[in-house]
Image (cartoon, rainbow, N blue to C red):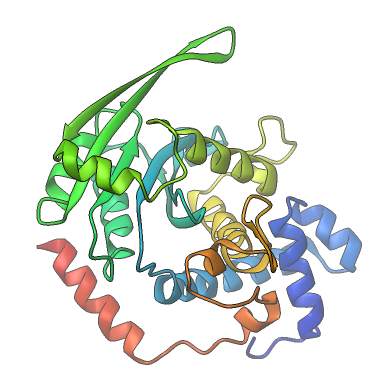
Length: 289
């Protein structure tokens, strides 16, 4: 928010519209600013949103995590890019995301980001993915010293619908799987929750729509856009499936991270703790080892 010439409310309103799926050109017409100004606002706020979620998104109770990747189908360098995503099933908390090419190194880096969000979790965790070939070696390397049960679910489609699902327990004990499965909303092994999150990404990010007049050309643009969408999804907008007697909760409230929804302007005015940079340097050094 430093040296911002526009009112703070207009700045937050622009990000709210962008997180609801309105393209930058449309936001510029509505608010009376140039598209380049909206682009600078998005880039600045995306960095802040990423740091905010790195610090805040640390759930203590995790039952099942589902991971998947979404084809971007943009232009130039984004033509072969994929949007990785991970969701905690019971609370619908969007744990991590990464936009990159689908390679072993990038998959391993994404799985490591997911593991970093579980630093305070003590119980066994179920991790469910599809049958993409890079998940198994990445999971075995990153989670080798962590209490986790890993399963793959391969869906067989017919006529655009799932005909059947073939689950496979890759590693971990069946007893630990049954114990952790009681703390999830899943009735049987599936990837339906992460598929629903993929739909949220398609709906709320104008770059990811199947037919768009302005496809993204840089991976950083999609990364920044999804950071804002993820922030609004986790902390600002209540989730329809998280209804309680006191009202509808956000995923962050369901995970016990907050007691009320946040206004986007509150997040933008949040101060980054000085200890964050030291911890980030240590994490990057450990990742290179």
